[in-house]
Image (cartoon, rainbow, N blue to C red):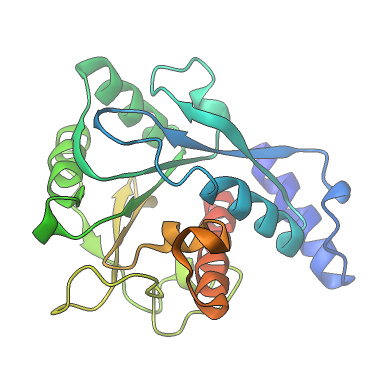
Length: 229
């Protein structure tokens, strides 16, 4: 908590004086992609480095991503203020991983999850993620976050809620779901939006520049919101 308060003060001063140089913050904040059994947890390798670079340039807080992915049993897990989970298809967490992720969230960590494929093709992690997170936090349901939730306004303003980069369900709008732990938003789940693909290098998905910018701004909101918890 002390680290987050210091970083927020630095960011606030940077914004006040029109400075966004990350050198003003010596504290390095890490976002780490989660490794799991059953699916391609390693997908979108350029996403987090691009997001960390963009968020650092825009916010004044110094963000980095780990090289590759991390296990939920990593002894340094609690040093990462944000974890990121994405992929296609199945997710299977072992009992010790389930316990470790619950402990991480209860201790103040923030988990961002991105559904990376359509359910109709079998590429969605939607069902598997919902099953696994219900084991981790059985007393805390996923709820749709309203458009006026602070996560959509923590740095950039998204009056219409989560932006959509790729549409996976033609009949539903994109949605941001959340899970609260002890009254604090601890999990953010991007569904039918695929903001993670918008963080990738431009040539990977050939997304329009405005879509990539929306995705990177929403990602920055998530990172900065994590510091407010």
